[in-house]
Length: 443
Image 1 (cartoon, rainbow, N blue to C red):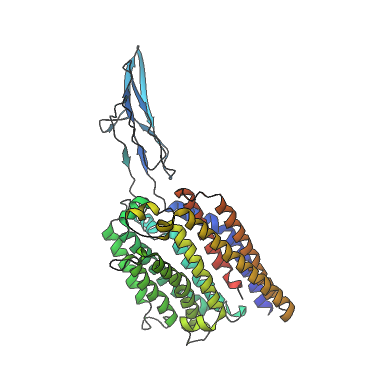
Image 2: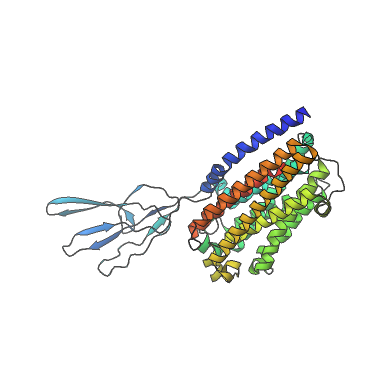
């Protein structure tokens, strides 16, 4: 018992540190996922006294750019324009603008001598592959598997074993590969939409060809599904098969014609609930039960119907998945409308969807807080299990804090401003990660 308590205390300290560093870590991944561009452009206008003047083009966006000094562009070459006016030599230069797109200047009194010129640095393939994988989704999958293994443990003393480590590693590799397949397939089929909504994505920006992307996703799919075969390893359980095959089938039908279920908002929502809720949580919970805790007959459906922990975690993350998915559609309304993708945002409007999802998340987190607070008092009063009461109170406090902070942040977001909504959307992923970090305390 003393060893178990010490392990539990160590885990609590580790979780606290991970929560503290989760937000800056995700921000760093997000920065890596944004391409760097260099833009330089100038306009030479002829004034009434015959002087040539250069003015920088105005910026439209706030994307991460290199800031450097760029000479005036004339006749397609970088040169310094020098003129002699009233006996004095004038050197004109254009300061490079920090923006991803540039406005065309339409001035009847000015002559546009040079169109905007964008030169993009070629990125190393590992960087392109990392951005192609959509890192914020990879982090969620990587955190879910160990959290569900610990949740499935019958007792805390059973969480530290080599068998659990092997099971986690064996499930994580194909899970991350499947994640790349699903997100990559969506990028391949949504190139035209992404050129409007997310032009920084590697295929839409031209950093990765559709052919190369297709090879990558097919390789990821093949390796991932190959690892579900029991002939490869005894760790290939029915739960792992359920998670990977279920994700592959629904992910394919969600993006790929002729199915393209994302066109139908209700069916798309059900796919998200199924994957984020049942398929991931119940599947890996059953996998952990079979490989680590001796329940060889464990299946996702059986765990869902007989184990309260599995059922409630699937419900929680299913609802959270809906919030994230519909919030993602809010800043994508322009491209979805043009491409005839009838998301809830297109049908109902960005403002109503944004606030509906914000309230749904607040309700999910506050109800979770109240439920665990009640469970904490019950554990202390009836069973005198103070460690259980403490773990439940920890989740209650975290959920209350998460609900209040997400609500306060959402109140200051303009639902019609795509940049503000996207920033809020990424903050929800941080709460999603933290949910898996505290999940092992949900007992």
